[in-house]
Length: 173
Image: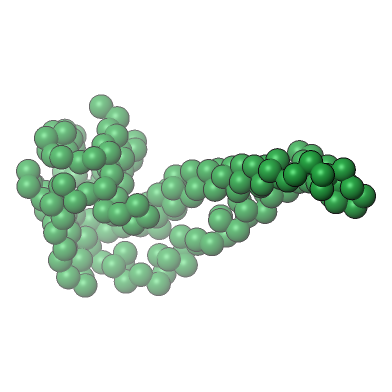
């Protein structure tokens, strides 16, 4: 099966919003957890003395945790700009062809062709308007559903995915 089309800015914005939302929630929570653990590991003899006691008691308040959450979220969200990425990447400006069969996924762009065996795909996630095909933890290809010729082609693609040995597969149907 072969599907093709052009990635639009809206596709990239939706994908980045989905991915960045998870990162912007998880990363600050991990940072806050680490800070909380470190502060709780401070020996009790340090906490009982003067200035250090005040500093550690203040830092255990929820205000500090909220500030860290907001600060880390801001830096994570401001790091990636889908509009800038869309303008810089020439691949998005030209047609992309996906050749799909039971053994592999072939992607042809203006820069060349790359093939992935299904067992080398890290994760695939289906959304209402697209599929995200992760070939590594932080790199994904967008396959909008509008690239498919019909709903039956999307069904065939899902069937291929279910038969493939993909480690993390999350489909809507």
